Image 1 (cartoon, rainbow, N blue to C red):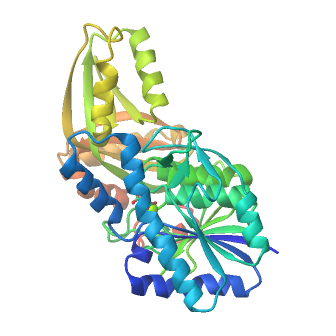
Image 2: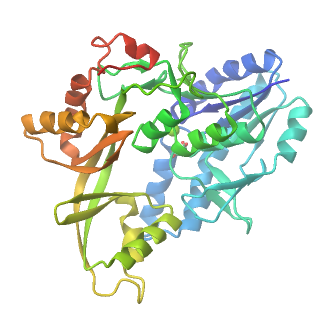
Image 3: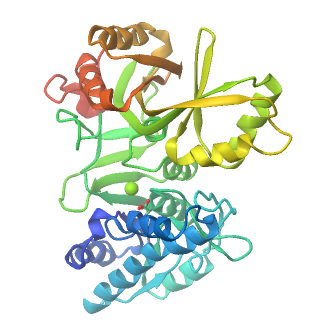
Length: 408
Ligand code: ASP
Ligand code: MG
């Protein structure tokens, strides 16, 4: 028998009626004779609501307690979905991350899965049960509950699929696939039918919120096909898998963005300090980017990580004599593609368009896979729309995009 992992995101389980609605999706797979593991997120905005509650009672909530709090969201959903499945006569059981054997490091709020002990899951699957596992959470070595970072349920699903050597991992969400840009904001974005793990990883790392980057990494290592599809329609979705043929042709795949960025200018940082800083941020899973232009250098971080970075910079005896200031309300915009470096034309095209429109920006270090700029949050959507047209990614501009192949 094959194992199928299905993941349902927050919108797909936002109400009792939506939960009832996905029961048939689960039973469909089960009735085909597969073993089914379902991973769910918290209902709707639950994670945000819980976060806001914490802020009401605490000015600087302890990370361990935040994870204790946030992990409850997913636990509500696993119990409700399991009850709904049982109501339809199915044999189903819910498991928390810890019960499912998901072990993580102890970076509360942004933990990484270190190992999965599949004993319990395998036992239940072999007993014929449908498993409903809480996404986004695991258990530390100490036995504490940890969470995997926002959007982390995707990672739970892909990591379980990899560990169980599943046939496929379906990610059910509120859009029907991966698009050339966020279809909820960019009207003419077009759906991509298939993508390689690496291309998806680049899109996800640079802001395509549709899939958590770590989920793609887990799937890639074990070659588990990932399918992003809608929970509300029967559309085919986007298949993410190994490349079918090698191509050194230049492709622009999509344009993605990340809001809520801060540029941190640090004066008096020696090169040793710089290395220490990057290492410390890495250990705390604080992602950062750099832009360097002429004599200026800025670390670009998420607003939500600012207090963490402040803590690091004020550690006793570490970064003495430095001064820093920040610029807020920034966004990163990235043109993602393949073999871009061979065509520096892209960088020129980006600056040409933004300059023509009078949109101020700075280039961020780019590669053959992306050209990224830092700009004001308020200019983000318009810039994306303009570049989306300029790179011929609009649905009606390019027919071939359906094969994941764009122009130039
Ligand atoms: N509930 C968590 C979040 O909102 C995890 C997830 O949905 O993947 O980020
Ligand atoms: Mg998500």
